[in-house]
Length: 401
Image 1 (cartoon, one colour):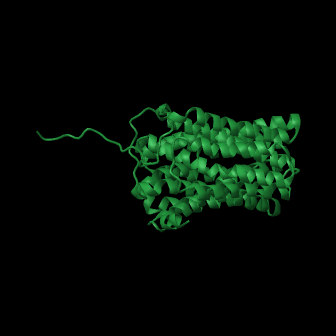
Image 2: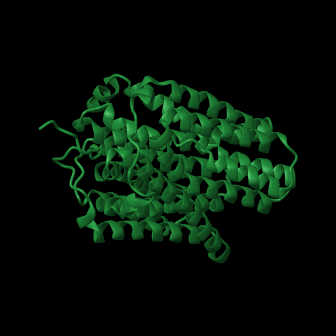
Image 3: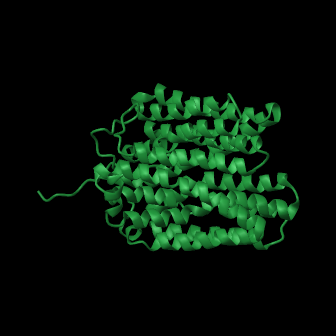
């Protein structure tokens, strides 16, 4: 832990971590709040699901695009524009009495205008710390983001059920504007300028580590989404046990990220960490007892944040600095599609064989991630004795002869 204390004492690091977590806090609230509000207004979970799907599609499509824009127009301009548009779209969902297609349209706009804070901050990190500190910083970031997934659903569910669903959406707008403004005004955001990329849009996916990070992120988050569906189905749609088991899952990830953050990342690091996730998820299929599920998901969680840290580091080191934001946008899109796929597959299997089907789906995603990481180990960069910072952008310099 002493290493993390030294890291947080680095000028600006603690401030930017706190600001970006606050700015991203709505990410853990929006889906649930939209679902509850649209169901409350329309009386249909099917309609709410359609609106939620439109929001997710918007996020998945726009992530790489808005991230790339930051190299063209600057981080502050893109973050400010997307923040304002997203806040207006969510406010419209909260305040207007709309038919389902209208809710879907504003959900799509809200998703497409989700501020690319994650891409921005992970582009800034290499400019704030030295090469020795960068891998622990990625691990710390991956660990602390679990706070979002532990606290945000609890807060938004309490507000939506005890106060009102439209008030819950307005709370999201307050976090979006407050946290977003705090992050945008940080001096680090103003100091770091992303060079304009000279490559075609999507070209970064030709880099094997970026493509692998996108695919494995898809499988990892798909497994997590299937687990969430399985836990809710097991404990009667969100009882106390469901919340506690999911909290243990996130606590395992937080503990794993903090424990593994100082370990150098070699080519086999992803396979080992995904192996921990896969083993824990396979064990969930043997019993639905609350204690058994808590213990097995604690084990599975230990590998999640460390695996995400590898994703961030391998993406950073594999592309030029001008392409980092777009690369992180694609990785984020893979994770969003994985979340949707995991929930969908788990849902079909729950209908077929009840709650155990969701844990079968989760184990399948986890095992697939471990196998992909092992099979493609040659494509993973060896960062044990290497600076994980992005490749510097270079261009011809005229000289006088």
